[in-house]
Amino acid sequence: MAATEPSERRMANDIAVNLAHLPAGRAAAELAGHISRFWDPRMRARLCALADGDAPGMHPLVIEAVKLLR
Image 1: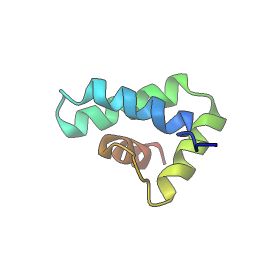
Image 2: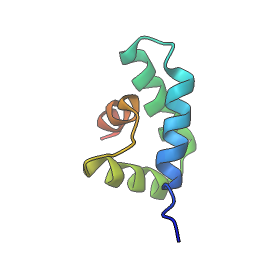
Image 3: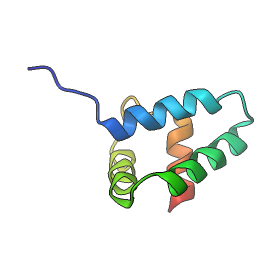
């Protein structure tokens, strides 16, 4: 059985790709704002836990956004 990518990481990466045309600081702030407004607290907590690890496969904007969420 193949391992699957956590849905929080996949969704955050997808949003980051869509915001990548913005300057990095603004893109991270927009991503953090989206996650804060629309994601369930449990989803945010799982994303933060994923970012606490070595964050393999996580878009750099997601890592910056998680820093802003804390």
